[in-house]
Length: 154
Image (cartoon, rainbow, N blue to C red):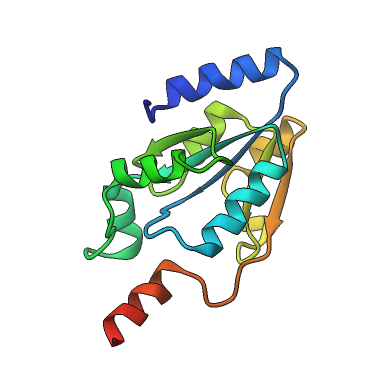
């Protein structure tokens, strides 16, 4: 399956025509863990379909440093697509998904509650179109960085 914006836009149009809603969330999703799964399942529960914006390898390195990602983007995308709650993945190369959100204009934008409402990228676009933003509580101690730290100390 492709991981490009054009196919996500086509899916979005079909959903609109059918009266279905689309949620969007994004992240690096390097080393999937239970915290990711809670976020993804909550995002899917907020709408009929879920599109996941996935940071490209270059984008992850810019955000997390030269040792990341551990898993290459095409493998991270395939792992996400294997999840029942994920309908489509869009790999983006920018540091934020602002351009992807502006093009897709999802009905629901979902982020972890660690993001302050006024710092959520794309919130303005989604709310201006009549959509809503949902913040999901994080699972304490569940992050890729914490997992990598545990691996390194063992």
